Length: 179
Image (cartoon, one colour):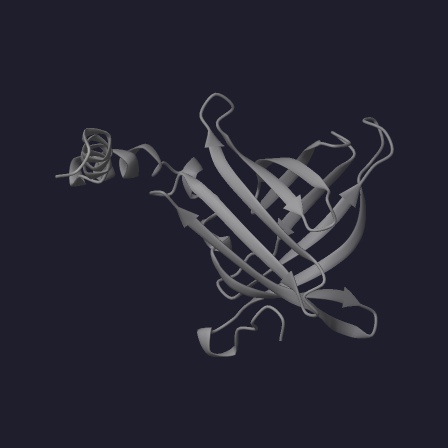
């Protein structure tokens, strides 16, 4: 016979996984605003855009999980010396996505998403709020471009920096960490 605590835990897990609960969760994260990250879902190769051409930087895996309520990303550089993980969630009060990054160099960053025309802006809220953002632009089914934008003060114009070309990868040619 199972101890009562374990039996209670098993019942709670089974209750959370009932179709009724899953359907309710799916319904709460299916609005148009919740769909903003959808074009970015997949396995991607990232390239820095240079005057000499594209330089391969690494692989990014992005997914919408928990019925579309969580956006999760994992990046590994080509030489496996740099990685990051992120977790994004839809903030109902702000009516936008918030994404938290943890980098392998010990740094962290938080971004608030915003749709501007056909682009998605990731405005950094921590650290250096209002000084740095990422512009996801030229979004296609098999590629998109990320442009770093910076400004010294709130009243300054945004200046574009590094550009990254991101291309969708088929499952057959994905890189493995450490290879």
